[in-house]
Image (cartoon, rainbow, N blue to C red; front, side, top):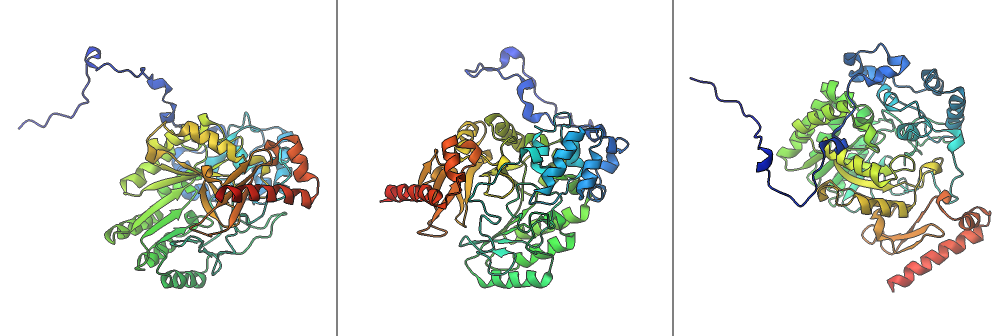
Length: 468
């Protein structure tokens, strides 16, 4: 018997291709498919002799992640100028976040242009780039602790709760909205303690099980990448055992900064798979939420990791943070969205940067978000198009950036409502000072609390007038 003929792609002659009104697209222009491959890490002197097998080992990545400022600056010797190193040292002295950078992440930075590189910008602060905080910034701007019935569990939305089993991450982002708790103490911030504690976890389970309206749990931190496989599985199975829980999301920055774990930590991925499969048998949704901010974070290693999750039936969504000098142009955000779709990660949210202290240089205005969203929408399928949101300061939750009741572009004050979360309340977002006019900046920084109150009162009055 002859073996079956192999399935070959059908190639039509050029004259058989139906005519189209759309102009021909040169495949060379489809840059979202062009992922960095090969031993790119060997460009870094410290990793020049590291082979692929070693670099793909998640344990090696974790062991060699840099957690001390002195070690980070040491690793950059020969790559950057002495002035840059001094600048970074000064930046860390004033940063609310501690340092943790993986070899993978360090290797993706373009060290020939360290001052403008978007990855460096997210993780390594420079003293020369820091800007004074807006006077209305807060260390816990989302008031997560106020909505926490027990430490590490925030219940804000009616049917959803945020569970924080720990407060450590594979890397520490400068812009973290939980800089009040994540990481170790810095010279600027003494952290709220949210450690791994099974008694605290059990208290959270009891609360969740006692609230029949709770259906959706986000497990974050910190970062679930830092949980042991057994801990990840225990948490997932405990929540799945509750009749009221219908949906669960494990949140991790890991795929963006250490995709090696998905490729080589079989125990962890197997534990996640078992939870996902158990959920499926119970007709409950278990997904992974991750956090890519720039297209350069997506490499051939990322693709291999995402393919592994996809083969396991693990659905992955992405949440980005809009940041100045990182992804605040239509071109960069479009490329990020397209590249995420290419590796089977669904763009879900783009957050207007939270009102976090110490990172005013990263914030953008609401107007920037509206402008970029307008250009991104339509470049790909709707289900692969993110929603641009403001996580309303003070606990209003996520609001579509367009849904403000009033927005004063001169003073930078936007007013939102959240009738299904906290009815009757108004929530204010404040654009960064550096994007306001000189006159408006003076009004905010003159030292007059009365002048600030006037601007806020005026925005609130106009918002309420529109609602009458």
